[in-house]
Amino acid sequence: MANRTMIEAEPPMTHPGEPVAEIGLLIYPDCQLSAIYGLTDLFRIAGEWSGTPRREIRVSHWRAGGDGIRADWDSHPSDRHRLSHVILPPSLVMPERMAARPDAAEWLRDRHAEGATLCSVCAGAFVLAETGLLEGRRATTHWAFAEALARRHPGIHLAEEHMVLDDGDIVTAGGILAWTDLGLTLVERLLGPSTMLATARFLLIEPPRSSQRPFTPFLPRFDHGDEPIRRAQHHLHAHSAEPLTVGDLQAVAGMTERTFLRRFTAATGHRPNDYLQQVRVARAREALEGTNAPVDRIAWDVGYGDVAAFRKSFQKLTGMAPASYRQSFGIGPARQAAAD
Image 1 (tube, rainbow, N blue to C red):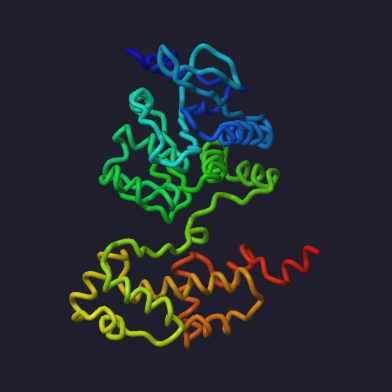
Image 2: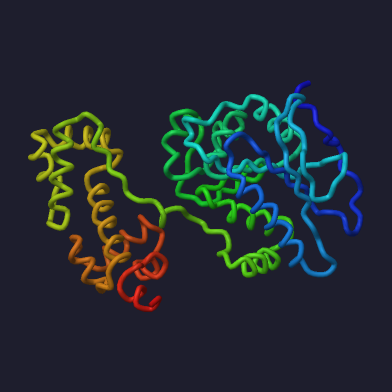
C-alpha cells in the first residue's frame, strides 16, 4: 500500500518521562513552513513550562515521497510512531492553486481510523476536506476562503466566524496565523490550562481566540449582474447615514417589495436591513480605528440615533464592544502620540 507507515496499531505502556502524545505536522507543497516550525517550537516550550515532573509532546514532521508519506524529522527519534494528532498547516498559495493530494487524503483517513485527531489551519482545510471526513460536519477556515471551500465541498457546514472549532476528532482553525490558537488549544487539551497559559505568557501571545469576526471586513458584492439591485446598493452606500427604508430602496430599484427583497438577498447575500447595518458598522470600524472621536458621536455620524442600538449591532457583527475594538485596532492620533 502506497501510504504504509511505521505507525503501531496499539499504544505501548506509558512510562514516566515518555511524551504524553505525538503530534504529526504534514508538510505539503507550498505550505507555510513558519507554521510547521512555529508549532514545533510552541509544543517544545509548552513542555518546558509543564511543571514537575516535566511532560512533553513529541512532534514529528511528515512529507510525501516516492514510497508514500514518511516522517523526516522527529523530536523524540524512534522507528515507531503513534500519532494522537495530525496538523495540516496553512497554504502560501490561494486555494485555487493548491494541488489535489490524494496520497495525503488516504494517509489522513488511515490516521483518523487509527484514532488520530485531524487538525487544519486556514487553507489547510482544503487538504483536510479531500478526505471526505468533513462532509456533514462543522468546520472553519480563513474568512476569505470560506466561500471557495463551500463551493468546492457543499456538504461542509462552514462556521467561518470561529477562530478554532473543536469538534472532538476534527479541529479546524481559521486565519493564517491561527496556528498559535490551534497550538495553544492542543496544549490545553494535552498538558492542561495552566501550562497553556504559561506558554502563552512566555510567547507574549493571547490565549486561543474564539472568533474571526473582529478581523473580518464587510466586502459588498457588486458583480452579481442584477443592475436594479446594484442601483439600490449604490443608493444605500451613498445615504447610509440617513434614515432608509425598504420602500426607499425598492423605489430606486423599481420593483415591488416582495420582488426586491428576494432579488436583493439573492444578489448580495444579505437582507436590506442587515446589509445597511453592515455598511454602518464598517464605517464605524474605520472611525474607531483612525480617529479619537467619542463612540456616541461615531454612532450618530454613521446613522444611529440610538447609541444603545449601535452598540448592540456593533457587538453582534464584530464580536467586540466599540471601546474594546478601538483598544485592539485603533491607530488614531492618541495611539500615535503615545508611540512618539
